Image (cartoon, rainbow, N blue to C red; front, side, top):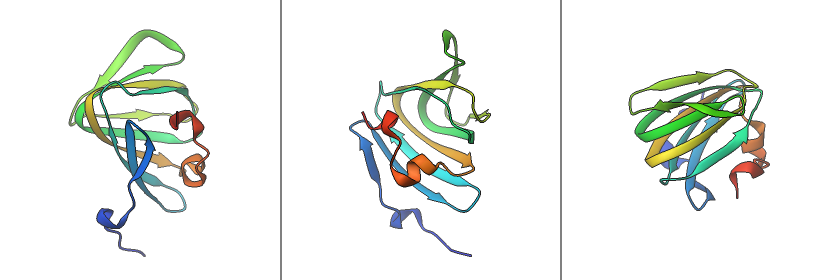
Amino acid sequence: MEKINWKNIPVEQVNPKMKRQFIHGEKIMIAKMEFEDGFTVPWHSHENEQITEVFEGTLRFWFDDSEDNSVDILPGETIIIPGNRRHKALMIGKVIETDTFSPPRQDWIDGSDNYLRK
């Protein structure tokens, strides 16, 4: 067992509008993230089940390659996104949130998450 303090986890500046920290075990990962207003996470999917909880700002999601309907996640709200479901997100205001993934995001661990680094 390992005791971890978030203050000791490096903050990664993924792109000019996105910062993140993450920790992971063998079967689960949690990431603390901060986004600037207007940042868009482009359409993507991943095998990992995702639970997103918003603490500040509004996180707007679209699903299944359709921008006809959106779902806004407000502070104190959480959404569960099944693995392999395509989604896109827009940050409205400064957004602080956590994402929990199972299994851990290997593309984040090895830095091959190019869709976020633009």
